[in-house]
Image (cartoon, rainbow, N blue to C red; front, top):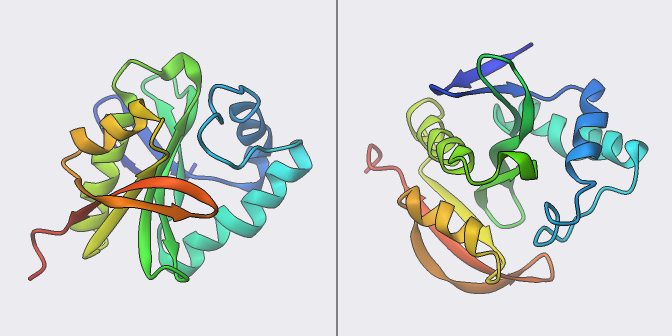
Length: 171
């Protein structure tokens, strides 16, 4: 297990191709993917997402979407992390959690820790976060993490409210 960092309650690790069943299971719940616009059809599709989208980010940018586990039992509850989007010239904060993990503060804890890691360990200058306007819970997470509202736009053919955090340690 390649642990990237931890919080008091959570452990963040890199995904592997063997995690395809976890990614598939996470995306089975229609409530989990209601506002994502990217359902996973089957385990082969989950494997393809890992191979083509998630795993290459680690090698190319030294960050990516990380598997999130609760401590101490190491139960997989979802993912959180950073994704470089060269076509937009930005680094995107994203998170997705099993419904059983909702309402416990995990998303806020994970997102805040990820922003901090991005600024302190990776030296990133700016991180953006987005959610569809109807996804009030996700918008609250971005606000609780101290991100500033930038505006509404269409991203990947979906309406999105965009927030940003600027690294205070980089002039």
